[in-house]
Image 1 (tube, rainbow, N blue to C red):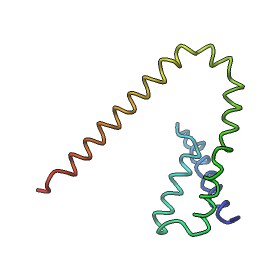
Image 2: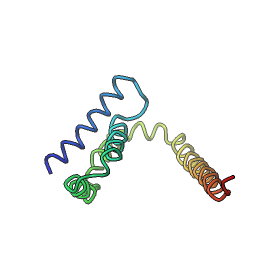
Image 3: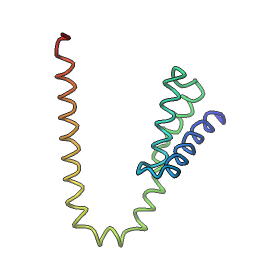
Image 4: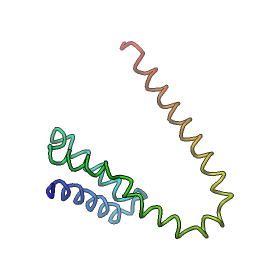
Length: 117
């Protein structure tokens, strides 16, 4: 379990270092997740220990959202100040995201259905 946690944390650290070093607009942990994915693709998948540790973390995922909830509560004045923009941006971005996802899905489905020439 310690080795598996070390792998997960090192990937997150590497992602953060890459993000900070290159000034990328993507969060470091997301880059770390991509790095972990690349490692797992190269090695043929996760070891049993890594799989079990990851599943254990996923079982308690709700606890990992507590800091985010505290952050939202601490920013309530800013949320109130920008409430109109948020009330517009959230539904519009959701609809746009769903539309783009649907268009891309249709494109892939049509592409797959075409016979190879």
